[in-house]
Image (cartoon, rainbow, N blue to C red; front, top):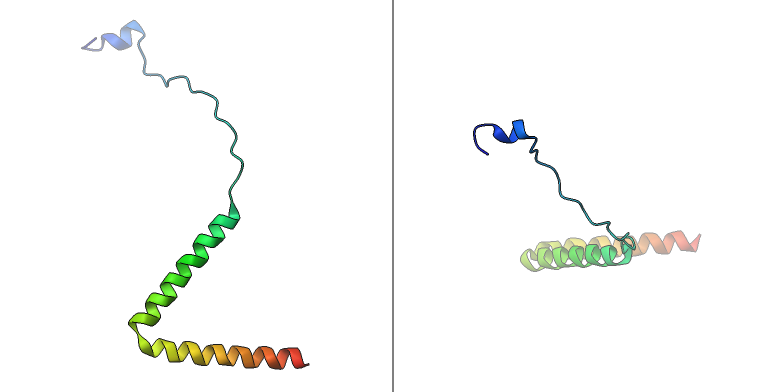
Length: 75
């Protein structure tokens, strides 16, 4: 079928017949959330382990956050 004979004889490229797919049960958002939180935890631990000055900054921020929450709930 060379030289353009395929077109003249009616042979065309077609997609194969596909089998019907089973509907999926949906996305497990709990699993996605766990993966995101684990990834963030790994990044934070790695960042703190490589740069010790971040540890003091995180400690100060955490203490400030706790102080703000304490003041908020005392009202």
